Amino acid sequence: MKDLIVLIRGAGEMASGVAHRLYRSHFKICMIEIPNPLAVRRGVAFCEAFYEGEKEVEGVRAKSIPAPERIESAWEEKKIPVLIDPDGKKTRAYLKPDVLVDAIIAKKNLGTEINDAPLVIGLGPGFTCGKDAHIVVETNRGHNLGRMILKGAAEADTGIPGEIAGYTVERVLRAMNRGIFRPQKAIGEAAGKGSVVAMVDDLQLVANMSGVVRGLLREGIEVMEGMKVGDIDPRGKRESCFTISEKARAIGGGVLEGILYWYNS
Image (cartoon, rainbow, N blue to C red; front, top):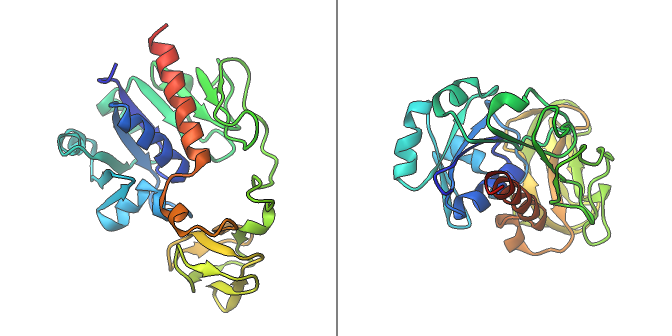
């Protein structure tokens, strides 16, 4: 079982939470991403390896590689290989994974097909069991978070961020206009209500509530109006900015359950 190869589409926060749990369970993991990924919770996103060479999250290290032919060498170093391959065709052809997990969390399917691997798992809205995935895992906060779904689809996207300490839309920072993103605070820094967290060109982006800055886009990225660019955690614990969230752990547990269910049946 531990020799199963798992290919994960995406390397942002949720995908990284899944990868971390599967890596700790001794599966062989590889992650693929788009160029210039737009992860907000960069403290816990393995896609940061593209900018830093390597990225460590809770004792697990990922390494940026240029091509699929370098996957095995990263595994030999006990690191998760991450590479740019938007549609995944090149990596799938080389790796022939036993499991493909679509962890892009785009609220819709961006091209994953049920025949991409012997087991295809889709996370959240956009996937239907038997149509474009064998198994779906619920990503919506609430009673069913992390649930393995064997029939039907995940809950529809509500468009409202999940509640944390009584806050929903207030905790998410969105660009007010199109422009270049310039952070004024760092991830892990405290932010009071009304304080300037970032600039988009010459317009200030202020916090709608007090807390700690849990996530911010990288400096210099061009953003669009309404785009998510940051995240304030009202619980105010700095260490939470650099550890995997309860949501990502629950989703990772659902994926692990799905793999064990499928291959132990």
